[in-house]
Length: 466
Image 1 (cartoon, rainbow, N blue to C red):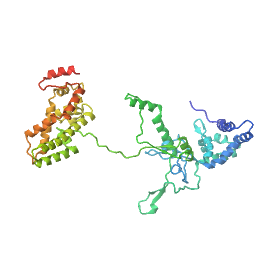
Image 2 (image 1 turned 180 degrees about the vertical axis):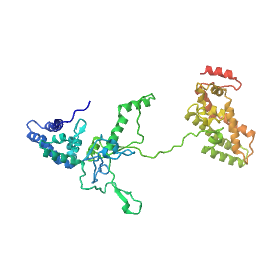
Image 3 (image 1 turned 60 degrees about the vertical axis):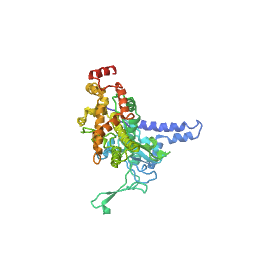
Image 4 (image 1 turned 90 degrees about the horizontal axis):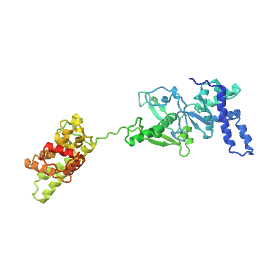
């Protein structure tokens, strides 16, 4: 069903209703016997009020691109360019607004009522747009005399034209010399650009961001996200969003649309991406975490250098030497437990089997570093091996062999030393053993599992402690 055509009567009734509302607002402030009532009634006769509005329209200018937001004291050219007349670009710009946009107005705030008149709509089309298009019914609604009506029309639409004879900038405005030629040393190869604020586009962006942040749909999506519930809608978020307030306590001094936003203008983040190195390094295509992942930790490398240097100095075999050596080895154990905790807590259960990059990793180290994989229903075999608890000894053996390899050179390192390093790890009460106890609690495993128990006995224990 199509909308009915606009008629002269429709525009006349809209204009008359607008003027009547303004007249009544002033009369309500006066007493019934106030002599000024007659003056108000006379001033608000449609012909009189429209003539006065046509005179005052010179005090304001309709704009889509404004200079005031650049600096409130700047004087220069403002532009009114309908977005539909702009070239279409791949980048976001005012052209994207098309025919549906909010025009802005700058100038004397006391004359803004004239712009409100021109924003009146009939069947979705504003009076200003109709007058710009020279629509006969809109022009005729201004005055019964065609010549007078045309004069009023010309006065009203003049607010879309620049107020100066030619484009001009100001010392407080932004200016930019843009190279348009081939020789950067030739002054004539530059064009002076004076960027303006795309006020209509900024108003549309503000409306969209407001709806995305505070609309009912996004409130429901945010609530579902907070409660970790499924939701059919879309959740909108603007990270790094900033707000620029223009005009201070008098946002109307900047523009009409700025006043409607109470001076609020959103600035979207335009920072380049900041790459963050993953906090957890992974044992990718490695048979052991010791040879690549563990030795890659800065504190491990520093401690190894200190331990090697200390042992190569051939210290006296006394209590001070033993305490110094134990302190350095304890640092390595702390780093080992910390590395294991990072992998256990920050990676999803089953990471060691869900990614082909970890196929080469030793099975005992998978049991150690991916313990919650045992809770997955399809990992009964893995859980059985974990409960058998022979893998901690394999971890101790691997640590002992690795430390021996790091200390070899000027130092004679053999099986005796490897067994010592293994023992130190497996008896580390506040580190490695404590970590194992916490894992047993988490997985509901017995706190003591004898290495002589059979797999069948271990399965029975597991059924008793699901």
